Image 1 (spheres, one colour):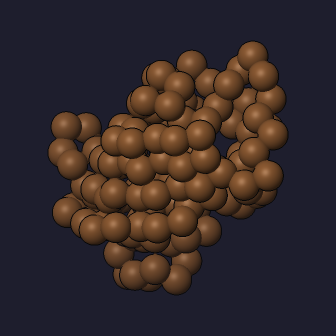
Image 2 (cartoon, rainbow, N blue to C red; image 1 turned 30 degrees about the vertical axis):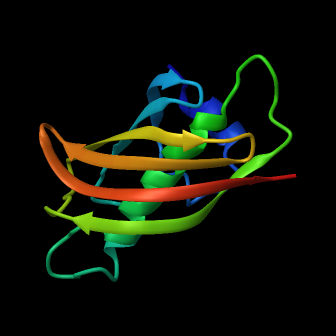
Length: 141
């Protein structure tokens, strides 16, 4: 498991854009599972459907993308190259995500090279799939 402090040290994003609370499963360059707890006091709710708090789809994609970057994570050696999201393909949002939900994102590497990864990301709340997307990442020096 990768805790929040390690996540902050690995991700290039800074507050308020940390979207992963913990990594609960990791097989380097194969699979990663991350958790994002959705709370009602997140800044995203201020302007997104003000009468009904729904976690924005773009933020769900960001959770997926940040989780996917951990395919390149190595605890034993500090990575010299950062993965960047290059393409989002066929993103689908199937159910709303609400305050109190726990988003569980599973990312499977469909194809990887030294500098690229083609992944499938699935976001669930409990057992229901709420979003899916294929993504392409590139690593840059």
